[in-house]
Length: 496
Image 1 (cartoon, helix red, strand yellow):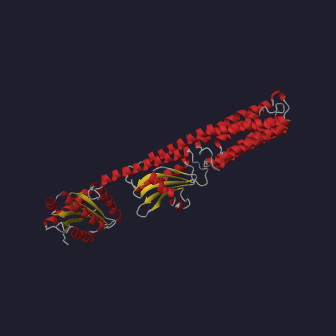
Image 2: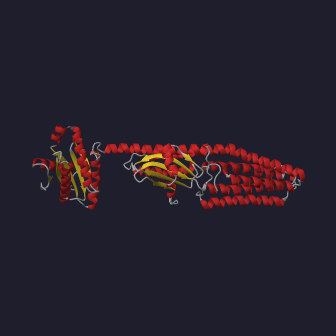
Image 3: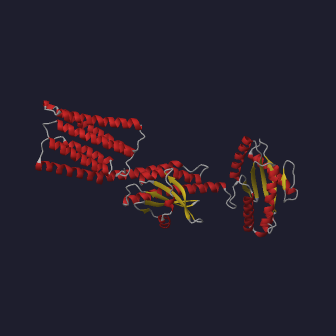
C-alpha cells in the first residue's frame, strides 16, 4: 500500500491520531448520553453491537501497540488506524440506531471518521471509508423507516457530502501535508549532511561513503523509492561503476547502470524525471562524475512539478555535501602534500613516523628511516635554472615512488632532501632498498649529472621522531663527507 499523501511523518500521523481520538472521545459519550435522555426507549441490541464495535477497536489498538512496541512502520500504523476508525464509525451507527426517537440525528458524526481517514490514509483507504460511511448511513436510514425518494435523496446528499469532503482534504489538507512532508524530509537530509562533518583524518573516499550511507535512506522520504543507487562515470572504462545502493541487500542495481538517462543528466546537469526513475547529478569524486538513480517501480510515482522540484532539491543537497567533502579533502591533501613533487610533506612524515613507532613497539619489529639528498644539486640549479631543477626533483620523486614497497613512505623533507620511512625493516634491508633507489635515481638523472646520497638509521625504541630523523641526518652528513653517491648507516658507517 502506497500513501497518497507523500509519506506522512511520524509526528504528523501522531498528531492526526490524537485529534481523531479527541473527537471520538467527545462525540461517543455525548451520543450515548443523549440516547438515554428523558428515559427514551432504547434499542438495546444496537447499543450492544455499538459497544462491541468500540470494544473491539480498543482491543485491536492495544494489541497492535503491545506487539509492535513502537517499531511499526507508518504504513502499518495507518492501516491499523483505518480499521479502528471503521469500527468506531460502526459504533456510532449503532448508537444512532439505539436512539430510536431521533432518526438520522447523529448520522453526521460519522463524517469525522471520513475526514480523519482522508488525512492519514491513501486513495484506497479514502474510497473504502467513503463507501463504508455511505453503507452505514443507508443502514441507519433503512432501519429508521426511510423509503423511496426520501431514502434516495438522503443517500445522494450524504454521498455527495462525502465526495466533497474527500476532494477538499485531498486538495487542501493533502497538498499542505505533502508540502510540509517535503520540507521536513529535505530538512532531515540537510541536517544529516550538516552533522557529518568532514574535518577528520578520514576525509576523502570515506567521506563519500558516509555521505551515501546516511543520505540515501533519506531520499526515500522525499521521492518514494524502491531502490536508490549512486554511480560514478569511469572515463577509462567508458561505463558507470556502482558507488552505493540503498537499501542494503537490494537487488542488483546493474540494470540501472545501463539507463541512457545517466549520460544525459551529466550532459544537461538537469534532473530527469519519469514514472519509473528519477536521475540526478550529485557532484564528482576521485572515481568520476556522480549520478543518482531513484528507482520508483512499485510506487505510485508522480511526474508533476512538485516531483521535479523535489528531485532538484535532492540533487542540490547531495551536490553541496560532495562539494564540501571535495573541498575539505583538497585542503587536507594540500596541508599534507608537497605541491611540487606530490609526495608527503614534513607534517605527514612526522605523523606517519609516530604511527610506525607505535606499531614497532606493539609488534616488536624494526623500524628504519633514511635521509636522502641530491648530490651537486645546487650547482645544477645555478647552471640550468630552477625550472630545470624542479624537473629533476619531480623525476627523483617518481623514481622513489615506483621503487619503494607498499608499506614504505617517502616524503620531501625540504629543498633537495627526502626522507624514507621503512617499517618492519632493519639496517640490512634498508641498505638494499636504498641501493636500489640510488641506482634508479642514477639512471633517471644520468643526463643531469646528479647522484644520490643517503643516511640510514634504525629506531632504538626510545627516542622521539625528531631525534630519530636527526640521527639519519647525521648519517647523511657522513655520506656527503666521505665522497657522496653512497649509503651510510650511523651505527657502523657501512658503505655499500
